[in-house]
Image (cartoon, rainbow, N blue to C red; front, side):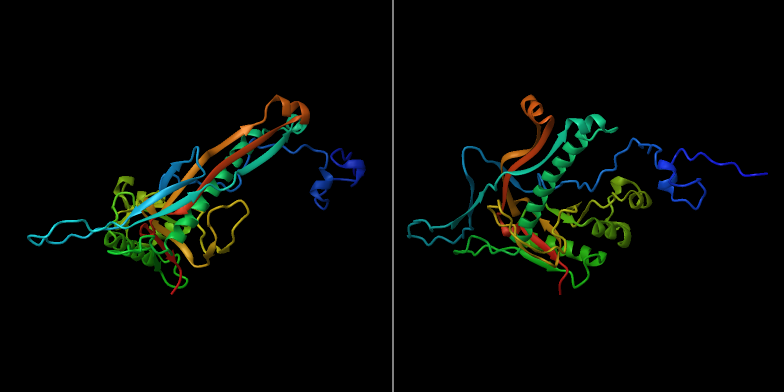
Length: 337
């Protein structure tokens, strides 16, 4: 019996005579509709966690924020018959944080594209703009805390000087070594205690891979029992709460082994440095300060823009600045000898 001749209705201009397995898929089914799954897979989204962990002030009606430091004073026994005339202490110093230029993230949504598209992009684009601003916010703060750990204290006069920042070196290539990380937490707690910093409000930020290395490699005595038994805590990945009284957060916005980060146009504070060995932060909230002239916000253009350009402009904006404050409150972890 003779073979029938197939009508290849799925291909353009009879590009192939049949839809046998040897034909290219996109050629033999070229005119068929691609079915939309109904889901939009988000690109990289990072949770921002720096807000609230450092000193923050609103900046209104001024161009900068001044922070005053007072040094320590001494006590001495009184000698009978001698007047008490004052010591001239404490020594005082200041640090000033200015606002960076306006940071924006934006997109233009053409009305015809939105009409023809079979999925909605507007809310997703607005969300991504917000994430971009929040990500920039975290990166500035984390780099600033790392730089604070490398600074001397602004109080240099007697009876000081006051202690500066600290660096804990885990060893070359030990950024994911769980035991080295745990040891660094106890060393950091000792350093902060020796500098008389409060225990409440101490925070650590690690790379996600470091965080899970701690959970999987270290004995379960560092897991928070509020998350259930040992197995439950390990399975959820949320069992690690604190080590040596230091609360642990994880973020992709650290300058983790980032190399040299250069200054950018519009930055009026210093966020640049060599972060080639950087692998984590442990700090108290006084380590850095943030001034906010405009909190992160997302706006959509009005009818005038829509009429003129037949679309909507979505703009996110942020005006803030970040600077080092008390370097004694900052500790940087480095994968270095």
